[in-house]
Amino acid sequence: MLVRKPLIAGNWKMFKVVGEAVATIEALKPLVADVGGVDIVVCPPFTALYAAGQALRGSAVELGAQNVYKEAKGAFTGEIAPQMLLDVGCAWAIIGHSERRKIFGETDALLSEKLRFAVDTGLKVMFCIGETLEERQGGQMNDVLSRQVGEGLAKLSASDFERVALAYEPVWAIGTGVTATPEQAEEAHAYVRDLVRRQFDATIAEGLRIQYGGSVKPDNAAQLIAKPNVDGFLVGGASLDARDFAAIVKAGAGG
Ligand code: 13P
Image 1 (cartoon, helix red, strand yellow):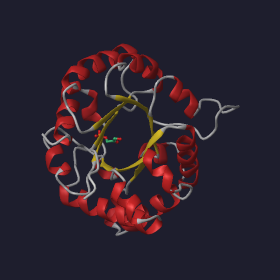
Image 2: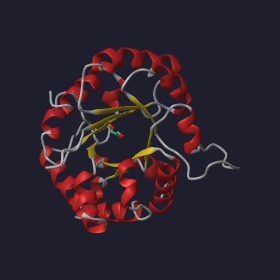
Image 3: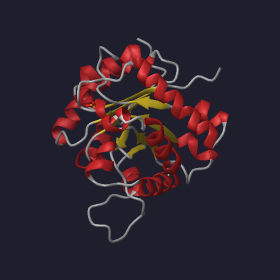
Image 4: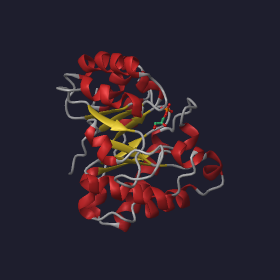
């Protein structure tokens, strides 16, 4: 059976100035230095990326950005190109976070273009999907996930999946302290994997890492990662603390 290497990423959102980011990374590095069999990523805000990248040199922890634009250069005030992220040491970008979708109005069509361009440029991408509480309670969860996966991945072809992971982040679990139960996460992840199987093929679906995100903490990570379709985490609040994030990384690596 194919083994998917767990992917544990910290999304720092709009937290930490440069000094704080570097201090967090310096604290994190020794805590995870001996943890094997797992990919680890930290995603500081743009302003701290260069310094974070320098602090991560020689470490297995990779650097990621929280957003990226779909053009290489030009008159796009306030936007950042994938080439610029690679230039400061990023290997990864998060695309389609629910906060980008909701607060900044990013559509499935835009996100699919961002994903296509980022992958073309050489970034690896964590592509986020997930339903709101209203959508779940209204019985629309599967439809929402189906639309987000169908449209979001529409521009990809088979070979792109080496560079793509999905992050299932139910909006009702983000920053709320309400974590999806392992059973809820497993159900959604299995559904999403089946969507990918139908849109592409079984090999791609089986190889695709699907992270869970939404109030992941050191004390719930082990139960979540134990589920067969949960292949890692995208951690918000708990990733701001080096000890908590390291504990989640260790849980993700199997204890
Ligand atoms: P929390 O872990 O703070 O719930 O955030 C999850 C998230 O949005 C990660 O991208």
